Image (cartoon, rainbow, N blue to C red; front, side, top):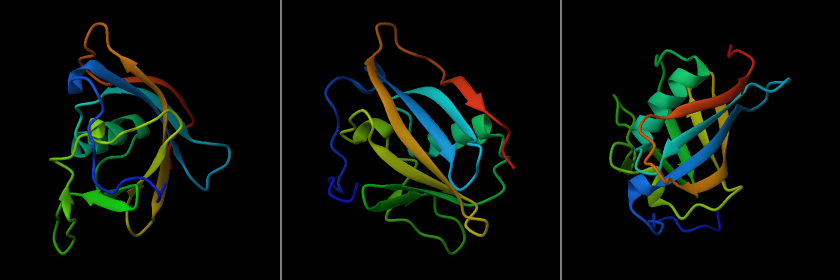
Length: 141
């Protein structure tokens, strides 16, 4: 992933026209704990964090960050600072291809590292309104 561009470049189409099918799984746990979900391309990384909180069963008690193509994104809190605020970066700002991956860390102390894989990129014939959890395996710790 590090050979990818560090500056987001929007994909063709309007942000609400694309839908991403994502698979998120918690690394280092066997058998696998995972969820499959569909989100719109115009979802911000901050919104994606809250979606992950719901689908994974977390309760938003810990700090988090996304690591996408060599750069960290998050929300400033206390002494933590990120060059790019996750409130202003959309998932569709990156030139994703099917099977591209990025990571999401929840709880900097426990370091619950999740891998997210882009499984499908679709044009939404009818714009998708809410995010959808399509499937999942096992409860989170």
